[in-house]
Image (cartoon, rainbow, N blue to C red; front, side, top):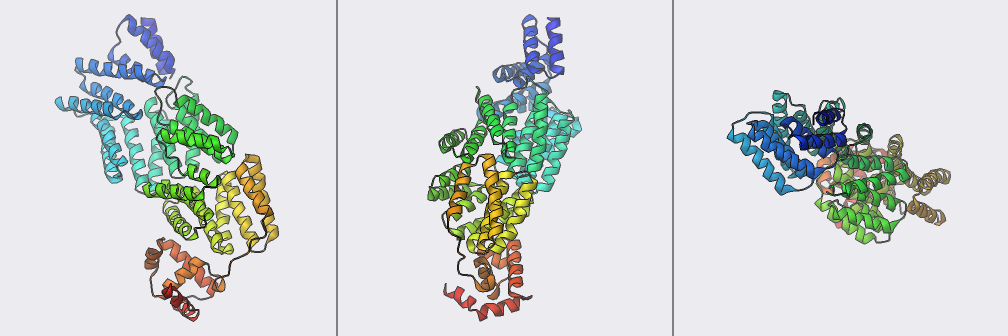
Length: 553
């Protein structure tokens, strides 16, 4: 028994989780383990993927702690058992064990770190309910308790929560700084493996949702190294594969991304099925859609939805590619209506602009693009701004202002290029090529379109190549009737409101766009008309009859 116990402890110390679980279980058969080793066995069985055995051992450690009068450790065992149920989506048993932990502490009037642990699910519930401010305050109190008790795991969990709450409040800079600080503790080995895995996955997901692509890439690489250093680790390896697949897709490594996503779906689909399985199916669906395998894409979007993963905007983009544009537009309107504010909504808006332009609803596309630009200005992530520039450039092109479209599209292309995102960069170059053609620059158009073709061929982006082939055989695009002095339709709209005496803020409210967007339009109007004051622009509008025209409409 002593040999098995020693081997189990040594394996645990070197993060060999399956070996630790096996040896400690053998020792337990010979002689019941003490509380310390029960906790080791509970953690090791979880980390090698034996969730049911882990739950049994955490429950046993809880009762052992009670029997020995170690109420804080009994409460902590109950917390980890509850948290394990939460991660598996089993809310009823999770709530029961959290209530048990709280009662144990209340009965013994214990002031300890475990009080802070019990604040974590309370804060999570507030955050899921949309009350980010209350969540932040609760996480902050948990962090104070963690620092008072010198508990690194609690400090890390609280810091993670504070960072996520700041992102929900739109304070991305402070949120990113908070998450970076937490990751320093994780990568330095200051926290337990279970908490490290939780933090890795949560931080990467937050970075991806906020389009902080560089941070996402850096922390995904760190997670990969962490997983590779623990060959017997199971729980977080599937999520790591999903994150790696997303990064590989962004960088154009589509075959490798497909392999990673397939491995993730296999790992996450083993009983008990992990909630992240939906993310793996969504990633597979996206890759099949981009390569033109619409049947498999449809299948994986449905599997993703069955596992609780919103299939939009990917499914709507699939419907558009299948020629079902109106269906795609209605699906995106539903998704937008249900989406919270912030970066997640931005991803939906970008797809909505694409779909609405394809269905010739330029007015609605303009409103969606303006909202996306406002989010990009507020949050400031380069990937998000590039997405906004792409969307607005596409709308400007549809509105007939090819010059302004190129001015917006060039920076977007440069950002995607710098982020090493070849597919997104090629999509922008396609629009730049169309704008150059509309401006009569056939050489420029040919170079941009050729560059897009090369990238799409390298990636195997069949649907995009087919669209380019159609464009190559189409007659040159004819510009619509020009607006006065080169003003775009949106700029004419802003000018008429300005001439009616409205402030930038009032114009923004009328058109449902941001103050910054109005200011940009006003600046463009002044430049095109060769004026420098609002009164001069107003005189122009009256001379051209624009104010009267708007009143009649």
